[in-house]
Length: 380
Image (cartoon, rainbow, N blue to C red):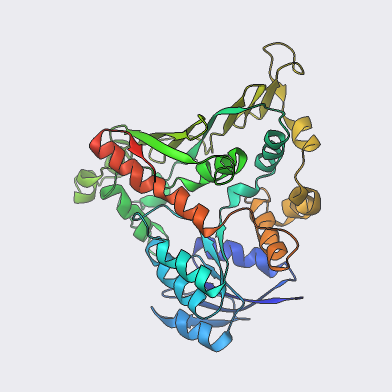
């Protein structure tokens, strides 16, 4: 298998990013794109426009792999159409919309023998993979506490220049912003949770058993709408998503994961990572580490020498070119695409499955339930 035929469903912000990166990898031969409303697209591939055009695209081109980067509510339906027609799927991640939403896709993928690759790029951060190796080799001891989250000020993305929620036509704000007036929970848990599950060995050595979530009041997005002159709009009055949602997740082996969703307040972007064990702690925000018996007593060290010493196999192979090709996401998108290639070639196993994605996204629905009912929720 020297090349695989690739098609895209959805060609917005994320689709364009991945298209550019895949175009620079010889393994991927992009033949077609389907998008309901895109007005700009590459002219060297076939383009299909319309709500159901992706089905015709798949039937006519028979791609080996379909990259799905459409709005969240279309993911399962479109992925199932791909799998039904014999394609593997590279599926963009999202927040959970309903419990069991991925079950039909999981059953169909197993039935058809097709793979669905969750494109959670934070799994492929250089530091995360190095810390995973440290954890696997016992450098941090028994992992007790972990922290992560999605802390990214989205006000200027969700609001247009006049303070209209979802007013940036042609962007994801048109559909994504509506969650701020309809839901109160962790809308986007996977960026923070997926790497922590990888490090902890969730699904192999441990599992998530219960969570409790809390939400602050919702004022940040509304305040920005007031500043932009749209504070009297119905959307401003209806915003219900707490500015900060904090979720505490318990594991079967007694570890605790603290997850934060924080997108309506001013702050620099952060994934807020920390991994703490019985022998030491890694602080991903400040890029520092403390290992008992190695570090000077109660004194942080720069984590760079440790990250280099425990470099993952992925970054040893592709790290140099990843930084050059993917400066936007510090190489992790590029390494992720290479990992998909390596799995399709049978050289290594992609580190996550559709079952993992179903678990990560379930936090959205369960956190809503916990906040609404003010109680601890058992995870099945």
